[in-house]
Image 1 (spheres, protein in one colour):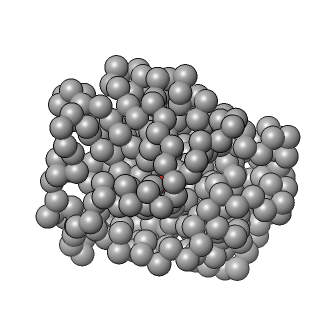
Image 2: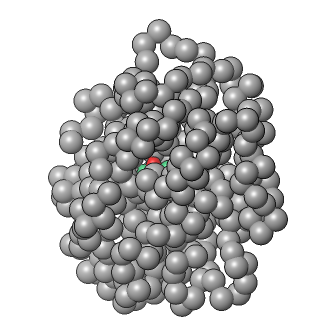
Length: 306
Ligand SMILES: *Cc1c(COP(=O)(O)O)cnc(C)c1O
């Protein structure tokens, strides 16, 4: 991975100037067209371990999952056999994401929503990392990566974001949140004086703080403060509100910043709205982590102009 491809973009807008706030965006979406954003970071240590153990990777996701296609692509490149357990019955026409995953050699295993929930919970971290050994999730020659890469190795991988890119001059680090794995990594690599803010894409996922805390180590008071904002889910995960798509098109026109429909559009909207509502003290220096996910915009057809 050529980490230098990710650049820092400074946003220029009245709503920033008027409130004395600066906003940069770390463009991790530019790292790679398929494995863009946070997915490579979260997957890297799982995949290394699976490769060393000579295992088949098995992981979980829905029809438009960035995690599924990223896993498929990385396994293809690293020569690891892999299977995706896909939520819901097999559709007549595969989504672009699943077609790509299949092209990269992933075996797709469609299961009912009920079985999906059972299976993904069976292969998931249930304890704080200090008490956990990832190998417990695995059997035979199968190496299970939990849904969304949630787990100790996923968070450790995401903490590389804060090690590779110098975020030390910012007062606030802000990112979209699904499972919270990336946010845990950002917390672990930040300075104690920085504030980490996650904007949740899911409707009232009240376990998030606990689930992020389960990934933090050393779990002590020297880690920076983090908080989760629940106000910008736009109806819930992967709900496609017309207000959000027109906002995405507007942001692209104004700032040449492409956003994805599931996470980063809600994050950017949330940041603008929070600034307009005076959430941040004057002179705050914000950085948003653009976590990628643009491939999922294919689900929107021509509603997205970029
Ligand atoms: C997967 C993903 C996230 C969420 O990451 P978590 O570690 O699950 O919280 C955020 N943004 C994009 C674009 C993603 O694909």
